[in-house]
Image 1 (tube, rainbow, N blue to C red):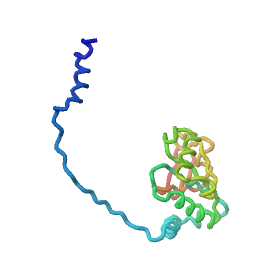
Image 2 (cartoon, rainbow, N blue to C red):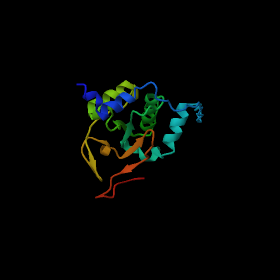
Image 3 (cartoon, rainbow, N blue to C red):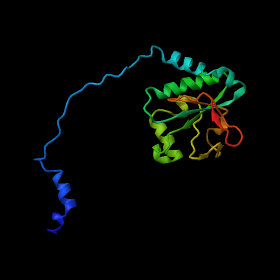
Length: 173
């Protein structure tokens, strides 16, 4: 056992805890980032949705997939509810789709649970949450994901419209 403590790996590890090792110099700094205030979240969300020409795109009950993630967007349940309200106002049929990769254990139930922890639940949002871990390859999507929506609105990075065209010509406009 004595030889174990003399090995280079163990000596390097124990050196990290050597209190005589000099610490690097530290400096204080202050970072100021712009933090614009939104006077009316309702107006801001409605204006954003309207700028996507949703009124024209959502008529006749088209399904609209609204993605919801776990990126710490302030007031996300209220924002999603307002997006849902606006889409319904224009005749669309909104659904919420979890969009967070490996968060929530990379399972459909885990992602839905994580959304619930953020306050994103059907009773609050007023739209169904459809969670699936189906995978997409190119333009061909597996059943159960946002391909059931003719239009996609995404919070955070807003994708105004997603059209799935024949073969590999699927695109986002």
